Amino acid sequence: MSEFLTDTNFEKFRTLIYDSSGITFSNSNRPILESRLRERLRLAKLEDVGAYFDLIKRNTEEMKTFLDSITTNLTRFFRNQAHFDAMENHVLPDLIKYKRAKGMEKKIKVWSAGCSTGEEPYTISMILKDKLPSDFSYDVTASDLSLKSLMTASQGFYPEPRMQGIPDAYLAKYFNKAGDGYQVKDEIKSRIKFDYHNLKFDSGLRNLDIIFCRNVLIYFDEAAQKNVIDRFWTSMTTHSFLYIGHSESLFGMETQFKFLKTEWAVLYSKLQD
Image 1 (cartoon, rainbow, N blue to C red):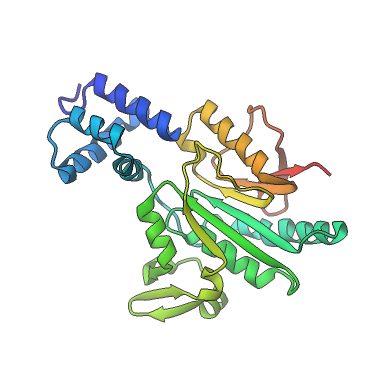
Image 2: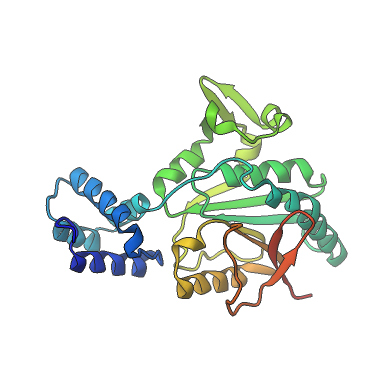
C-alpha cells in the first residue's frame, strides 16, 4: 500500500473523479493517478493528499486543472486514415445527396468530442473544405476536458515533427511555414469553434451530422459510456454518423445506433428516415 496515496484516499479520489467526469480509475492505473497527484501537490505547495482533496472539492478551477492532468492527450493528424477515407467516400456523399433530396440547409455540422490538441478537428476541417461542393458550408465544434490541450488547439501551431501524416497537397494549401513548425491557415481555423466540455454533461449541441469521439470511451465504465452515447443520439440529426475509436465498440450496449460497415472503415449511423 502506498504511504502517499492510501487505499482510503484512492477510493475518495476515484469516486470524486468519476462523479465529476465519468472517468474511471482502476487499480491498474492507480500509479498514473498517484503521479499526477504528486505533481499537483507540488505546484499547489501542499504536502497532504487530504488537503488537496479538500481544495479541488471547493475550487472549480483547480478541479478542472486536476482533471486535465489525469487525461492522456495522444493524437496526430489523419489518425486512423481509414476513418477519414470513409468520411470522404461514403459519409459526405451520403449527407450531400440526402440534404439535397430533402431540400435542407446545405451545411455539414460536425463535433470533434475529445479533440485533444486539435489535430483531429483540423483534419476534419481540411477534408470538408477540400471535398464539399461549393454550395455547401460547414461548422466544426471541437471540445475537450483539457484546457491545456485546447490552448494548443486554438493556436493552431504545430512543430514540424507533429506534421506527419498530412498529405503534401493539404500541407501546401492549408498551412503556412512558421519558424520551426507550421501554422494552420485562417480559412481552416475559422470554421472551428474550440470549447471546454465535460462529456458527463449535455453539450447543448443539436442537429449534428457527424460526431467523432475516438479513444475517449475507454476512460469510462459501461454506465458512463451509455450515458455519453445516449447524449450523442440526442445531439444528432435523424440522418447522421458517429465515429468511435477502432478499439472501441458499442457491441452489447443497448443503443439505437446501427453498426455500419463501409468499404473503408466501420462506424455507426443514426438513419431514421
